[in-house]
Length: 314
Image (cartoon, rainbow, N blue to C red; front, side):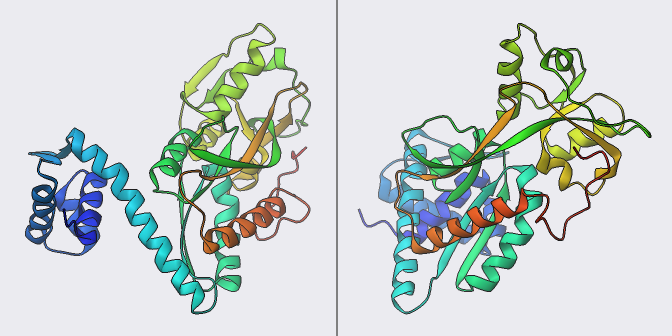
């Protein structure tokens, strides 16, 4: 077989986007030319890789194998280019970083500024995602690095524990009310706006309350920090979030933030990479910037360029 790297790249993009039309736009090539190249790859493979239908494409079993291994091939080619570029002088290459939504609001701007200043040869791309989804993106090669909450042990992911972020009860701000510690028993009586399963914060809260023998009282399930905070501000219920979620909100003054007076209400933040692929010099340099930016952004005293904390901040 004499598979063409370009054909593999085209196939991977079509499979990821589920459509020749969307892939042709993303790749900037005509759809007939894209379809012809993927068809040539299928001829080389000796079997169909995609099933075409009116709504787009789905993968055959061979297509799923091609997608998984093709991503690895493209990653290795990218790494080869990066390392050869490094030998020409300077750190160079592309790095894709995944961040949870709450941390993305704190870290994206400082990281881009630091990367532009200290790693001008590195192309940084940042995407938001939940821990469960980003684990799969790391394993598949779509992400090089990710900050993940409460990462369970996985053989295909290497992780470095960085720090713990305490969780708080976030409620709608009421004039004159002062923040106060909330006991787990009291938390169990509060209607909560909380993400759907699977979610690292929800699992943590459920496990902590289970130790008290109390279940969650759910007012509404909502995914996304903005949606949760919007519902809290509207009085639907309270939420359990990390300090970073409120600190990064443009409407931080609309919330009261209460510490939780009980064990187990802290989220462990890990810096994760794939154990199946070696890290490049560009990735290692970016990991160092991530460690520094995270420590500085989660320190309210040193935080700069972000909305001021409300008076109700504990």
